Length: 364
Ligand SMILES: *Cc1c(COP(=O)(O)O)cnc(C)c1O
Image 1 (spheres, rainbow, N blue to C red):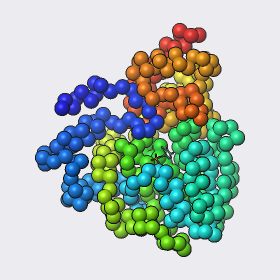
Image 2: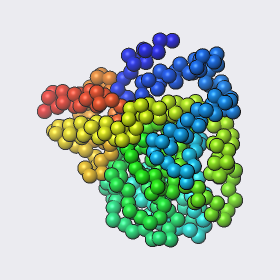
Image 3: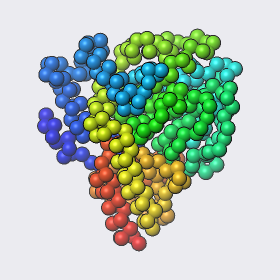
């Protein structure tokens, strides 16, 4: 296998998820799938209890702690079932029947989280941006001190909005960070629980990272099935059952890459520069208009539509011809979405911007 060819075949991958990973990570993952560290075995066929893989798990946890500055008050877990399983697992573990949790609804993923939490306790939808098809982040609500938690989606992958600041509340925040974890620094200590499906900004599909403040567990008065109980996974170091070995391995490689490139603060700087580049073009170009409120724009998923929707097909074709793939917008927004996660280089964004400019010259 010629691993250097990974770079050459690469298109500019703007997919929303599963999504772009750093080219060196893919090369190393491919090599390990063939022969891991010269062991004569593939990473795909080794025991999750082998000391080699246990070391991978430990490194994945310690890199998570180091990159996000996670204290020992929190457990770091690598689970299966996707972020979607966390919609109910969080409530199952944290929300008693008579407890109240507050949810901010900023779109598809929040809506799903709200639906699941209602199976367990009292759910208050304290704010919502449904009135404008989720084009902004609601602000200025109060959360009573006796609430169990406030749940929010830090980055709304579909609508292209993102919390620039997290609300100042006295209760623990539970956050779905699937599409912006590791993209910027934030204070973990303000959160009770954070979950993130790996396939947006961390690794391949199949593993979900969970950070949970241990003192919040064991408080609900219900029987919790073993696999749904965070305490099971804490006690067994995320290996109560067979963990997703390969997705964890690749996520660990991505974290190494993040560290080598300066950590999450450096990622944030790069991400800001990339977002500025695409949004400046969206605002400048007469053919396009941004879909999200400017102050709440996501640095991970830039959503935009065309003034003349009849040109959308031709623009999509021009972008595809230039090697830009995955920019078709989600059906609930329409238009386009450029997902520009950590691994997307600024040159990739520039390629898309060049297509937008050339298209405007041709169609002005
Ligand atoms: C993709 C995504 C999900 C769904 O993740 P699964 O791993 O497919 O369950 C949930 N929340 C957000 C914010 C997402 O971007």
